[in-house]
Image (tube, rainbow, N blue to C red):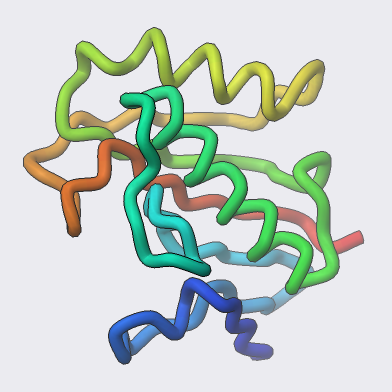
Length: 125
């Protein structure tokens, strides 16, 4: 196993890796909608939260040597299913023609007041 860390995975001393590479796959931990540089939530509602979580996903993919085109599957967590349409729009913009398998999970409140968290599994190049 190879453990991958990013700027955002070291925040607040949390005990996890941004990604773990094993058996030709990259398992990416949930990426919250927090700016890793400032630690702030994005302004602009759920769309901005989705964009930030996807930027953080890009950071983890890059650190593992992958791109979004390598993503096989995503789980998207949100505190309210009413956000689904706005999240889906940003998700589709991010992935373009690439359509990984996906699950959207309505949850209770997410950590730090985030509106989106995304985890993924990707294939190594």
